[in-house]
Length: 277
Image 1 (cartoon, rainbow, N blue to C red):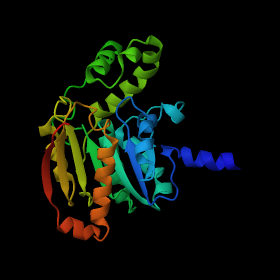
Image 2: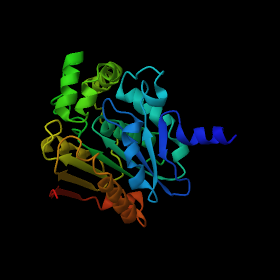
Image 3: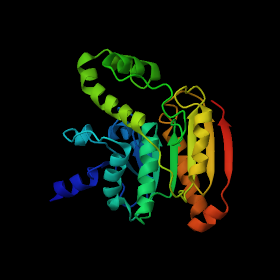
């Protein structure tokens, strides 16, 4: 019986609880980048301990969902993730999405709102052009095996020792191809604005998500908006879990005594460049 209970805590048909903390009032729900999985955030467990529960979305075709077919669209992925969200609805959640994950987090949050569910208290995204931006596909490769291997090396998210492992690449390329296909095929459909803060983080050296591509996130919420540029490239934000956690804690602290209408009524915007250490 204990084994069944533990399985339900760690595999929620779309989400994996990486750092269980049932007593915590807050869950940080992370959405992975193209070619990633829930395990992409496994190393964040230490940073989250004592601060929040850590969970991560997992698209079909990888990890615990390895045998499930890839989704055909971001809309289909959001549908699955919104349907699997219910176990988190009893607590405050914050969504964090990196690159492809930014689009997944945004569309899942929108769908939860459309269904009248509470959804996340704020949305943190990094290194992805705003939905509807003409720069959404900037820098993306063609989808041949050779082009995808070159892309992995250029974007610096995969160690060279793994890039040189032919067996591993044969395993990894299909999910990367499927995920990038989701971005290529993504067509933003305007709808009601979110009523939660959106916090955007970009890397000053990230050519796949330049500053001008990030500005459009401001138009997607009635609540506050902040855009920060930090030192580094495409994976700068995922290398800084404390930055994401501090952002989460700041917004939750600000919203303790505010209603959604209060937040929307006092919407504000800010832009910051965070100097490197």
